[in-house]
Image (cartoon, rainbow, N blue to C red; front, side, top):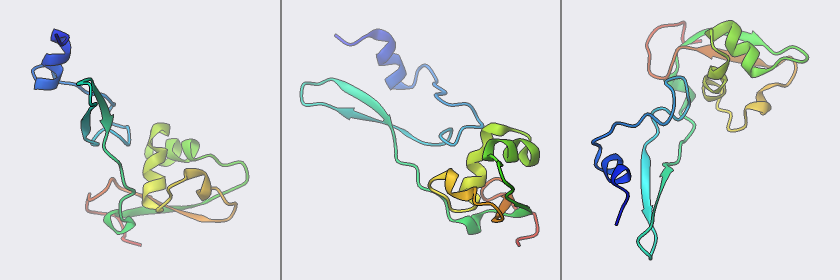
Length: 119
């Protein structure tokens, strides 16, 4: 017999919010895999880095020595957890790849939000 709480979660009776709104995974679908023996496991669907053209540019930052994406996000987006938005806007699968001294980072509005300069 399945756990009653698990049944309610799977049926959507109890809403779940696995990730906070500022998480890169907040809008990622949860899927369920059923093993041959009937057990199930929940997992996140794959998240793809979005096309940078979907972002409206509001500024640009030159990377300095010892910069970190969380500090840049805190300064320009108001939340260090949003470092992933900078990575997405600059087509980076590995955020650390963006920290080459002297490189320019696009600072953008959230995906598909109109505005900014478009630069």
